[in-house]
Length: 380
Image (tube, rainbow, N blue to C red; front, side):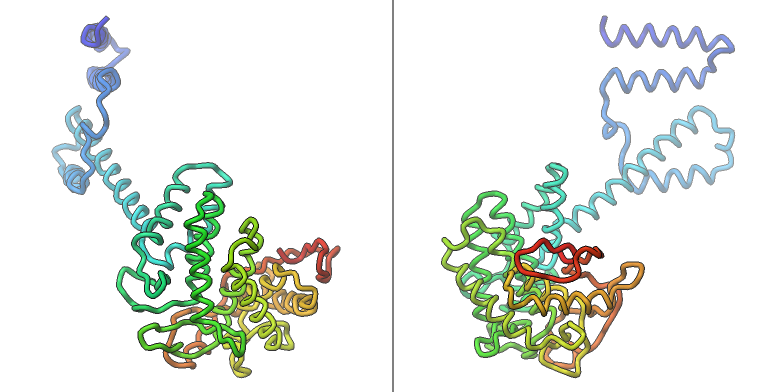
């Protein structure tokens, strides 16, 4: 039986029923329209038009008193306006979400770490697609200078020409390494290690072992010249992860630079740990405040590195970190900015509450201290 014949029979039955109290003519009309849409496989986009015009028409319709009897025509037209308006609002929200996901900056690539976890946990392709779009941006479109060094970007503008920042190690290099290992992409792994290599050359002071926040390749200087706490935490934490993530890391020549840089940095940082077990927002400035996110990252790097000589510094850091976590789990005393400024005072300003923490703490009375090589429950 053809679709036309089926619809004709259905319309006849509806017409007969509409002559009885069981079904009103208007209800019969709605049933028939619905049947036509289903049987003819007509897509919503061929009937409804996602447009703000539909919303305006609907508002105008609601304001017309002569339509208040809500006859058949008024109801059908109102439904069309309502559905078209909702489709437009949905498309607008989706467009805004898509734009947020594909915003092309080095900073915006940081969410890639969450996407890896979501993809591995759920297997949903959408997470993998967004993740790989960020990797494609870093590979093909991100601004670079020198020996393919990524320029740090926070907007679509060329805000910091030929500048590399410690931030990029976490936002991009570490992400590229994780994805390269996950996808068995040696080219991407080499690119990630190249970022580590050149950021070490540009940002680590070979004399002190500490890291500057940024380097201006055009001016040939480190701008503020500050050993920012969080920058050192980014460098230390991301370098500490390489050996555990990269299979047979010792086969990669640039890994030797990463491991050596980390050892020198941690050896320097332990000297600047305060009596409270923390590190300051400007590492070598005794007047700057103790900063929790920096302390968490540095302590996590020491824990991951597994040097038994760092045990006492880790234990001391745990006490300091716990003292700055409120009863409701809020992390206190984290900075509210990371902009590379041209003057030291910037880094001493702007404490706030609720910052992120890399060193996750789980209260477990069975583990009170850190010992190299043992299962450690308080810090992960």
